[in-house]
Length: 176
Picture 1 (tube, helix red, strand yellow):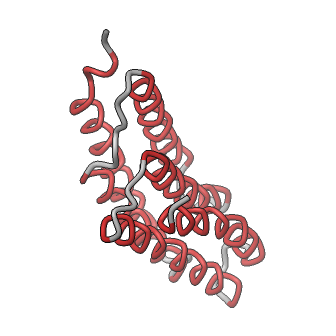
Picture 2: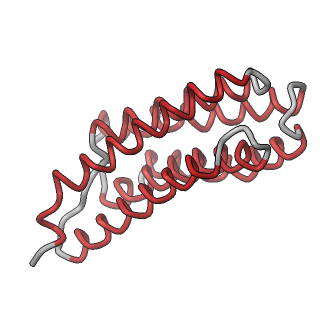
């Protein structure tokens, strides 16, 4: 296993720690929310670090192409789920994100069955980065209502756009 993949696994390991801290915060500003934000930022930064290491040291692998976007999905969905539980993110927005993630994962599985690995595209990276940054703002300012709607809007728009782009660019994988 490459160093880049090990760093990605660290991101996955941060998720339960993040979830516990979020639960302890109860969705309210304070120490637990700040600690959760710190863990989320560290986990998010591993996304950048593992990519840099993979490219710089030629550690790009099919396992990494699979694991990296999965780790991103798990981290952002964990945060969205917490905010949904507290009523700060509407369930329909979470459902849009989940639908896109399942659909793109399904597309990737069909592609793998045909010997094609679909790496993360540019719009997917923008979606992930903007979601992570937006979620950081929600953790820093959890009681600001308009910010919540701005972040939800940004996440939904980038999620839908990137999902459509993945299917447009890879539609041939769906047909024999």
